Length: 233
Image: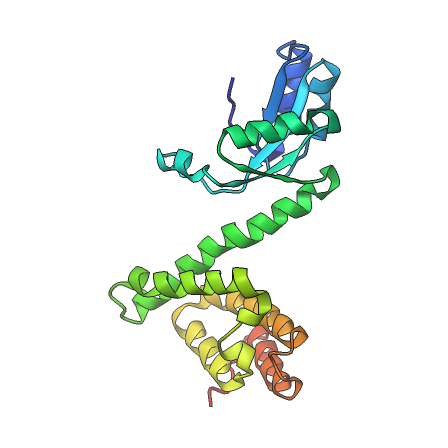
């Protein structure tokens, strides 16, 4: 039996299944929530079920392409020690790669995936909208190679892959960006400023952004937060 429910509904669902006798002793009970480990299945465990948490680190569309994406996909696996081999075998049978996640680390693990994948969609969608507003006829064709290269560089090199005006400390360019966004896409300003501050912090910590350039840059970002237009010199 396969049920699709939101993460927040999972604890109540498991309790209900156990209370109504839907769980049988010796039955494998698997959930694919990223947020929860095996402990959320404790009511079923007390009823004799064998609890497994197998979360595919993949985004799904509800179409046939989803099955193909499981090949080589990493799964966040959490289970009692005695069921670890069984859990990993199931993932391998599906063509995935098991990655063991400790019970207490599941929320952090899920937050990391949401930060990268969910927010990426928002960033890309905003970039597409801004390029269309700037008159670009095929923004997807323009962004595809750029974002693909940026992702590849980031996965290979981490913070060393940072480029652009924030990492260089180009305060005037960032001020111009903020000014243009306020004029043409005010709904994007808060996200731009938040990401620019996070990028500046990482660039400073990694030595890419020189401290003497960071002061002006951080000042621009602070004025942007206050709603003032920066000096687009």
